Length: 194
Ligand code: ATP
Image (cartoon, rainbow, N blue to C red; front, side, top):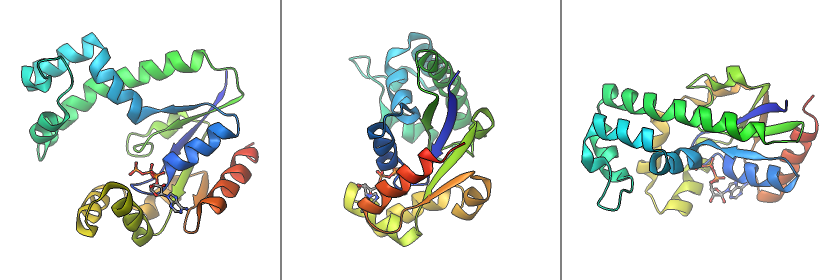
């Protein structure tokens, strides 16, 4: 059975960039958020449950997940959001269990924004946090997503504070400089996991 390293980081930290480097270094990465996006469209059981919870409009005429509608529905409704998560998260967990059965490397990585929030680190051998200063993260997301400073800051404020994540993480990659440094740090960290 491979060891699972939970890979996480707040918005704009660089966790996806690190995940790509990890793949380049030959280790498999499970992208939880991407898989969740596929699962809400492909898993019939999940689809039925979401429609029961939020209404048929949660899916458009082509049967595709209506992200905008769902986001508006659960926005400022903690109860509905929690119920939605209770549908999606177990499905992702099962999907991950199926994925890991097919893996042959001694280490695999699970990228998830909510590693600590959902206590998924409990099921991991180690946790790996990618972090950078707030200002740097905000600027990177502004460039990437064409969002304003304030918009990114609002998202950031809703996430677990960086100082709490730093306390919980087993390994940390500081991503305050450039991409070359980030790749080197990634290599150093992943080949020193023991
Ligand atoms: P999110 O949670 O918002 O998806 P993320 O943690 O996955 O973010 P990335 O998408 O990897 O973060 O990085 C955010 C943006 O910053 C990307 O456009 C990426 O190319 C860029 N970036 C990441 N690290 C660096 C760096 N060291 N130097 C310059 N740009 C960087």
